[in-house]
Image 1 (cartoon, helix red, strand yellow):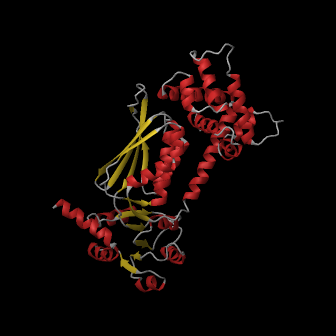
Image 2 (cartoon, one colour; image 1 turned 90 degrees about the vertical axis):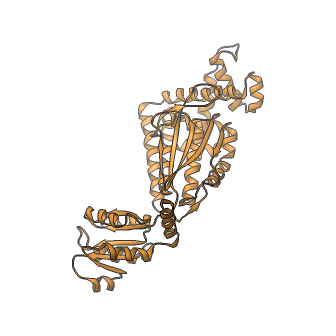
Image 3 (cartoon, helix red, strand yellow; image 1 turned 135 degrees about the horizontal axis):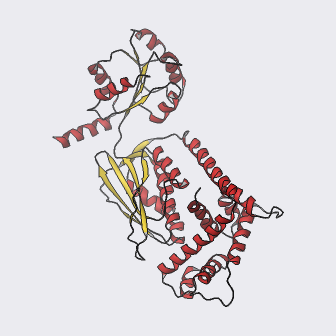
Length: 422
């Protein structure tokens, strides 16, 4: 966890300062190692109560000597934190009280929270900071493990509809942080191919991360088409780093939706009306149509290259698996239309792998062709294989087999692509 991520937790805690149960379930759990270091061990309080008391006391310690003058930066920081979070004064009233425009007050408020969080972060011993980082990494690892068991179902999805749906889910947070989310996405774009649940969660996590780093700013989303992929770009994100835990989790969710997420390494100039703040760009890439998969299980990498060359003109994605250690996992995740299985492999032979795949409820239905240098068709079929190829596999016989298993929608996609070329 970086200081920026720590600030996100403090910001969330301030928004829910008097909701102890929310603090217990959220930031107090993540920041528990830090709380143990900086709180009085004799206080009989839950982590949420400790975090509440710590923030209240930290704000009060910022109180400068009387008389208070809102025009002085230090005084203004204290007054904003006290009036907004301790006294719970509505923002519109505070804008009038501080004689500020809406944008100016949001900037001052954002700066005040960052200053408070930096003071608290620097108070923690280095070992406490390290413990917070370890806790965040451990929880992220647990969440990644949970994603591995997620049962996906790929379907065509209207990206604009799902972006609007994700923004509506976050409407309370968007409103509370005075952030603008503008989606300039054309209505006639082709659908993306992904699991709807995974992609929706990925978009929510992506927008939530962007908002957490850019409260009060304008986030602009637009999409572009590149052959068989669609790129969704989020402009105007402030101070986000690739190592950010929430960004890494969003990337995991996009991977689950058969997409990819990256952060533009070269920040671009922000269009924010308040000035020349620097802003980063988040780029999400998604497939625009379904490409069925052929899974090649062979310890020789040359085999998958040969299959890729044979199928180069077909709407097929070739995935290779060179080890028998994770065959079941790869087959579950890719759900191929056909598995090409070699017999002679280290650790476990193809017959063992065949029986494992055909005995598992998630993979038994997948068409499986055993590939062997020996003529063992009878044994392969008796063990549950659907097909048998004797090596070397001929291009024509492989294409004939593949044609029988390509779904109609992928065949039509292939036809449309050829029509566009001609």
